Length: 371
Ligand code: PLP
Image (cartoon, rainbow, N blue to C red; front, side):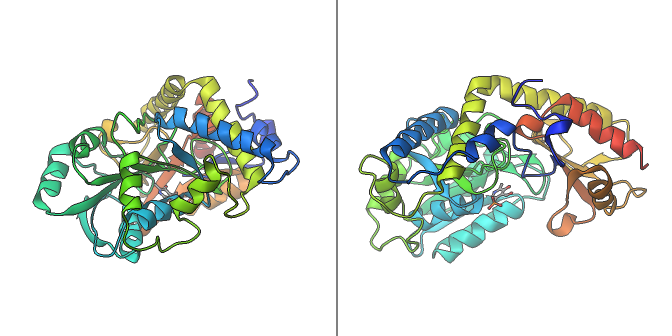
């Protein structure tokens, strides 16, 4: 076993839900290193390394690339709090619970939100997104969730970025579940603000939100008429700490950042392409077995579904309560449905180091012992 993978001796519970995923020993060890000051020059070296590693993984040259203190939702808030000014028109392509959250957050910061909704489990096609954008005058922001964790569906964003590239519209992408599990190219796809979380494919405990801002986004923020409403998430202030001047803003979560950097290093050592194909391989293997069971796929088309998070429609013979029984007896976590899918679907995650064929086998062996 290599040191980054999870062996049954290494975990108290196998986390096959929508996150958090299991945390490798190497990351836990990094988190337990001695705490030093967030203003110690040695710590600034670590921040520099984090920024460099994160740029590589986001595939961006954006200078403003760092981790927000707070979970994925803090990244979402940071994106909208900084970019939205009162009455800015924001178009949200909403295909699930996290699309709903985006719309809510954007409106709380004063945005005039227009939602284009998609039935849960289905994905948008570029042509319909293009038409929705063309219908609106004076759009300031377009936002979408790349990997909708509530449904397990993948949303195509590449062409969307290309279409928005030469406009003044700011393109925001939520990559909380997709980051380091499927391809994401911030610069090539002209994404202006991209945020993620740590507890999914990165296998770092929850608590930070990696984020990156393009020059185009920063220019819009510079021209704001009013201050950013959130002091804690104001990018103008955060930049001063995370970039050259290193001015104190808030006490950075030092040990979490140690763990985060270790998680980034693990991804870079494996290589993104290898990591993506490992997730694909596990997903295909899982799907091939599911086809021989009474479970259905919540996302019909394989190409629309996420490799790191499989959503399954429960057969009548299986009750959602079985998840808790499995958690209690077998120490394996499986995710349930959210919103109107509660009790109807399961969400089974193979994220980061958990994307291993042996974990698929464990899942089906345990399931077989109950049905
Ligand atoms: N966006 C997506 C797509 C998510 O899956 C999640 C969490 O699962 C979030 C945002 C919010 O992240 P957090 O729960 O870490 O605040």
